[in-house]
Amino acid sequence: MEVKSNITLKAVCYHCGRYLPTKTHQGGDNFCSPNCISIYKMLFKYHLCEYYNFNQNPFNQYKSQTFLNDLYDPKKVAQLVNYKHNNLSIITFHIPAIGGSGCVWLLTRLHQINSSISSSRVDLLKKQVVICFNHYNISLRLLVNILNQIGYQPIIPQ
Ligand SMILES: [Zn+2]
Image 1 (cartoon, rainbow, N blue to C red):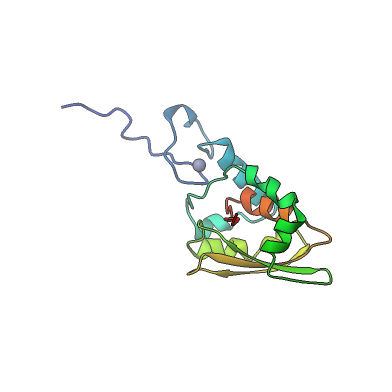
Image 2 (image 1 turned 30 degrees about the vertical axis):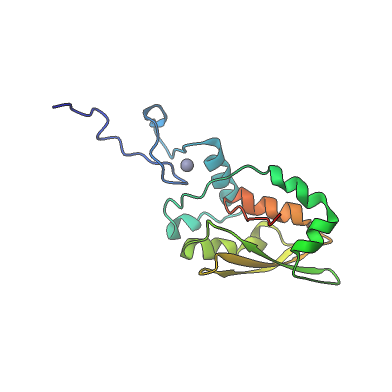
């Protein structure tokens, strides 16, 4: 019978919960990828690490942001925003990674990351977040980038 030598190694990525390769096992909290480190650093910077108490190993990971270039186009932005009046815009994002109380906890605290976000509300069943923001102070592109940086990449309809 073959004996598996790595059977006692159970370290997982502090952020996403994936098993870590043996070489990263020395001491401290470990991460499986630079993307997971960057999400963790973002949450740490804004005092949002309580997130991990709700969502141990949430599995959400930072993804490509090339589509953000679309959001330079004012026509595209106007098409995505639900409501716009004076300095206030309201937008609804569909975010597939929404799935538990930790997601709600974090996504309703977006104002802690950027004070130009006045409120955010989560619909768990629809996997949607509705965000009110001051469009003079924060662009839609930056708003989407914040969501990406915390591992909640929204689907931008084409
Ligand atoms: Zn990870």
